[in-house]
Image (cartoon, rainbow, N blue to C red; front, side, top):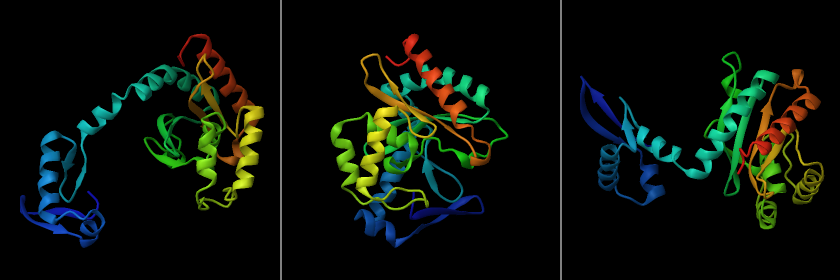
Length: 227
């Protein structure tokens, strides 16, 4: 848990080190946090290594049972494997999580850098191709909510002006893709996620990747993988 840790000496627990910033942020006393952490350890939601508390395996089990994500991941995973085999690049599957993109599945090779991709990580909608296609085909209010909030610059290519973002989303609505990302639709034309390919600029083949993504989506639709 951020802000505090338990230290061991000679194989036994010696003391608890508390960083004051944690109590300031939560407003919870050290004794209460310690008690809550003990309970979460018993439930398997937290685990404790030599120096700190961290998320437990039981929390992963609970999260894996979320129907919306579990079914989509299971159905789309085989097509992601085919995409990776065809392009030899990292393939991501993402879903909408509030006003952020949540990456729920990844297919890549052992030779590819793990820094190229996020798994079970989040990023802003406005600064990713997957996020923009989710905005383009999501609810009408979503774009307004994102555009009316501050958009910090994440890279030198990040769009930070609402008018520019709206213009780009309108273009995506027409062409039905952004960069190397396409939306995933059900037969009822509801967007349930996005699929993308990540590759270094020097070897990226935009036309081939986009064609592969569109073919994969058509195949998923034909077999009912997105129902």
